[in-house]
Image 1 (tube, helix red, strand yellow):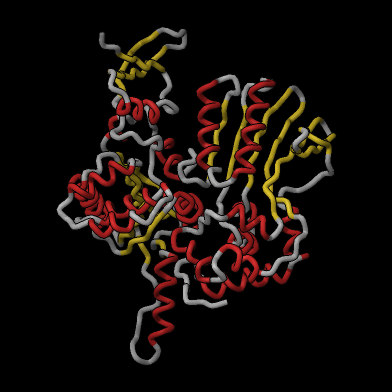
Image 2: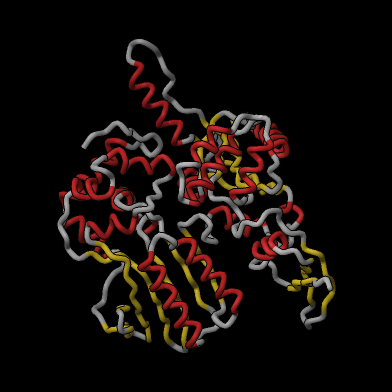
Length: 468
């Protein structure tokens, strides 16, 4: 007897990725249907859902490319070359975000990374050569992101290519971290010929798109070009959903997750659980605390909707340099919050860093976590600053990831701290209070950290020859 499975729903934004994975993991027939339903609940139409290829549980890979172009014609040529290159490599599902300068930037936008590179080159040229240090301005950019594949699927692409990929597989023999292996294979696939031509190329990642390109630099997304299964399922995954996925709001980027969910909806709660697990895979303290908070919210069922936001950059000491270097330090400091309305009260459960007042020198941190090498600590800047040792490094200088609750009922505010015994009343606190405090009470460490980053990192290029 042969069995078949039908997955039927009017809403597929949460189902699409696990459904696609299920299709390729099971031997039985699995078919999905998206229902169009009238306001009275009558089914108007049932459309077959085409799954993504592959078995990955994540939609978009967190490793991206950014290509700059001087004009619209060269950008259109770049789109055509991306299509050709992806087809030749066997990349079926991918997205190109076409970026234009925002209003007021009609003359184009500079690449901060290229500007830093030209500045460094100019400083070395001296009287021997004249190097144009004024960076060009670009009128177009293409941001490339593709479907996340499994290790086997990446390896198959490399093995079937006409290029010698033996070096990549040799490197993998000494790699044991799953994420590092996937990143290595992903980059090897993108590095295969042919590659689209452009005026300047940068490595990109979710936080770069959201914070730098769309906020700081002034780019806007004019067109979302979708290919493969992403194009065929446009009614399931809207352009807005695709951009959110690329920015990492689903937790795939391991740094950020946002969702408004119904605590009585098991599917939505499962999506929140999955996002937390991915973002906090290296942070056992917050992973346990957020799981306990979520369990509590689901059990009490006292609110129809809960707003959840999580930002976990995992940037260790870089966090403090970025926070003090900008007018909005909160965008660089890890935090999370569950917000819900219960009758006349708003309940906010939030996570923040708490400092125990330890006075530690930078040399102690380097010796304990980076083999006494400042260069090793700076090395994470070459891929965006993510440091898998974040929790351990912060613990060394006296910080802990903690959870608190505040209840706003009229003019009254009540604060509580999560402990092993449950919620205990505590004094009022500000989420950034202890981050501000360490700058004053361990000024020596903060000065050492800020000087190290300021003197060896331009925001683009990083000097890895430094000794401390």
